[in-house]
Amino acid sequence: MTVQIWSSAKRAYDRALTTAGTPFARLFLYAFSCLESIIIPVPTDPLLAACVLAKPQRWISITVYCALASVVGGAIGWALGAFAAPAVMAAAESLPHAIFSAEKFEAVAQAFQKLGLPLVLIGAFTPLPFKVIAISAGLFAYPLIPFLIIATIGRMARFLIVAAMVRYHKDSKRLLMIGSGALVLVLIGFWMLG
Image 1 (cartoon, helix red, strand yellow):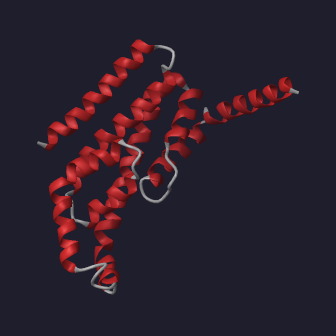
Image 2: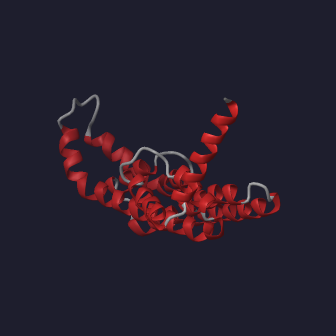
Image 3: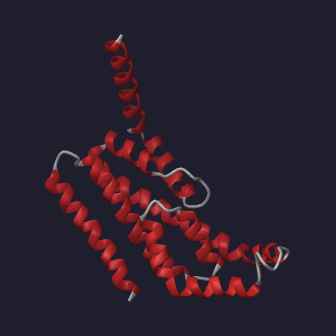
C-alpha cells in the first residue's frame, strides 16, 4: 500500500514537472505574476518554484521575466489607484465622519509621501500583498518612476532568493552567494531611500 502511494505521488510529481517545463507554463507564470500584483491573492512563489525545478538551467531568465511581469502588474495597480482616486474619495465621503474624513485621508496621503519608498520596498520584497502597496501608491499620488525602480529591486531580490533556493538547495556556497547578491539589491534600494 505504501509503495503504491509513493509510486502515485512520484508519477504526479513527474507529471507536474513535465507540465511546468513547457513554454505555456512559463507564460502562465508570467501572466499570473502580473495579475498577482493587481488582484490575485495567491503568491507567485510556488509557480516560480515549479518552473525553476522543471527548467533549472533557465532559472535566471525565468526569474527575471517573472519579476518584470510582477512590476508591470504593479504599474497597472498603481494606475488603477491613480485613476480610481476620485471614485474612492466620492465613496469614502459618504461614510460617517468617524470612519472617514478628508483630514484623515490627507494624513494618510502625507504619510505615504514620507514613507513611500520603504513601503514600496517592503511590499515588493516581503510576502505582504504587493497589490495593496501598488494601488495605494497610485491612490496617494506616489510618483510612478521611483515606484517602478524600487518595485523592480524588491521583486527581483525576492524572486531571485526563491528561485536560487529551489535551484541550488544542495549547493550552499552558490545559495549563499546569490542570497548575498539579493541582499545587496535590497540594501541598494534602502540606500536610494536616503
